[in-house]
Image (cartoon, rainbow, N blue to C red):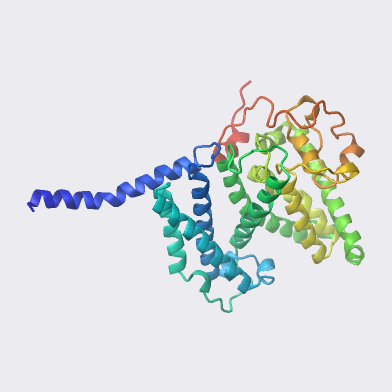
Length: 399
């Protein structure tokens, strides 16, 4: 073999990894940045699953290595490590098997190779057998575990519910602009931790004097169920008036319009929020709960309730609610809040108790059609993309 041929061979061999990396980037851009529905039959759906699951498994392994910095203190004391290890092993097997099958079949090969590499990296770092020893309990943390568990739990639970009881049949799981809303989901999960820190600071340094300890003890002494119902009512009163302010104060609406710009309602739609709105709303809602002194058990239960309803009420779900729809906020009720139909503008503000809107005269009372005709902001002026939506409130408006 001549020297020229050898040099050409070596050059092509050296360029191969670069071309492979460029191909992965191109396919990843198509999957993550080209906003649109993923249709079955093109391997995009299974590829999205392998990439997501492989990435989450890799994050989970890292969290096992550094639990003091990456896990939430309130959650880590309630974990069953054995169950988490089994779930991680299952995720690795599914992601590895599915990505390998796609590679063999030549379906989105580059992205599935990337997913398989993440699985191999997770296994190389210890996989589901990473030892967890003693570690300090009062270190700064970012709640990576909560993000992983919530994404997996929400996906499995609400996708199943949407397929069993759909409002719009045939709506794709990976629908238009799902990529944008997934970015909102990821970023805002870590913003919630910041909101909790702010609330904790305000309670201990600014508002702690507002309520006496005897009153707080009285609230905490109420039986669990009535105390939880009272907690949800107090939270929803704060939520209602904060939410209403977002609609009636033009400056605040610029932030809230990001949330209303979603055009397809499903379990992921509620994640689209401006970061500053999320922080401000959480502070306004959580502060009175901590000030009044609701018990830790009730607060934990409330977090479960609000977490479920926040996702469920945006979901592509329809069920026969009967008279309950006048008491509790349901997907049907909240879908009308997101509608751009004339009769739905600035209506249905409540997050938990629908009767608050009937009480304050802001409920949608008449609807010419059974379900909204269209979702989104009137005029459809919100730009696409996570970063542009975060910058939208600060952009100069056209006269």
